[in-house]
Length: 298
Image 1 (cartoon, rainbow, N blue to C red):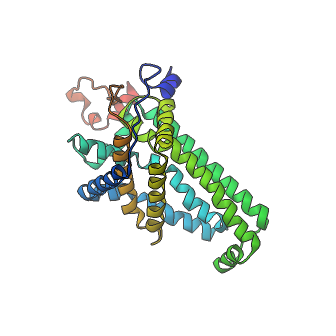
Image 2: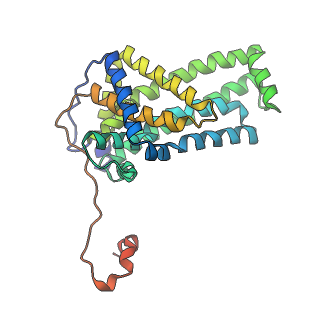
Image 3: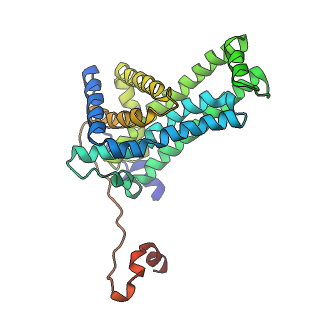
């Protein structure tokens, strides 16, 4: 039954949400609202997003310190594949602001108690598997062209890539393969994560709705994907530090884009699993300060 809920959502097979056709004006408005959300909640969204430059710097350290230089670009580019899941907390903050609710940073983590959490994490696992597959393919492609050795310096690596026929083959073929991975990840996730946050419809319906949204709005969605790529490149240039600003804007804008693409309906809303609260006694102090200990005892 738990598996069925992950796939189909609350109440079994759910009705598929209505997907609307949108234009460039809608895309522009979604981005403007994303910027407005960021300016309204800058402190905690930056704190939530600081993981991006930190991970970026970690990737660079690994690449230059442990002979992983050939897959630095695939690592940095592939990290964007799991971006839609990493921004789930930003979607929640935008949703709460939209409804006039408290937007304290702690609410960004309430997704773990949502009835849609299992479906959300199942989709996240799909993106992680895509990320791992992309790294494996990129590594295999590099080794097929240059062998199993690694360059001794950054200069040698750049010379290897930009001044040899094998290097240009790697650039062209690698980007073409990466494009296929990116399109796949984008199609299944651009709408699915915000939808699961907003409605308990299950992973299958969320993926179907996301793909349908892309197919119904191919030009606008392509423009949105291009905007994401350009923004991530700009944010990554100053040692990934700019991602602490770029990522929250993209996350908030993604929520507003979802609102424009998917029509409101009466499908089940996710519920929050509340921790049971038993009667408290004076003898429980100071154990009451540590509820997890009491839960283990019960």
